[in-house]
Image (tube, rainbow, N blue to C red):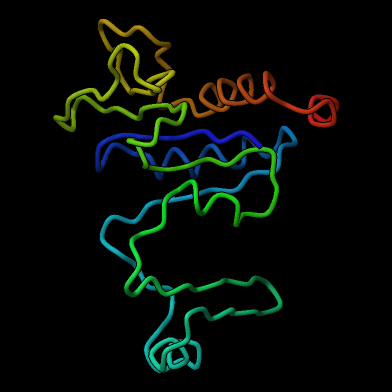
Length: 174
């Protein structure tokens, strides 16, 4: 399993790029899961629903199951937020895990950068950022610049890296 990141400042277009990349990458054969860090918390459960009532009554975990999906809700309560390294083993085996955010974790990553948003570039020499996807040319980069408006080129870059680490079964499929 290869783990690869998409990093960038808030509002740079990481989620939009992820959304556009997934069908392209999957069309080449790899199985893909994603991890997204939510800085402001989240809740996928609605007030009044049975599963929410279970959590509010004190359940450590609630497993929701339907004909189309399942989700495991784990309450963190008194614990520290789990690390990415703690959570990745909970995912089912896939060829590629695309991680959005977690820029401090040292994952090989593509930085999504829009100079028009007014944010400084995150890439620095020696950083784990291996390419920058931008909507305009970026001067002074020591890594490839990928056209943010052409997600197929970004997908090809990721697939090439996946091919470098792929099992023979995936190479035969791809």
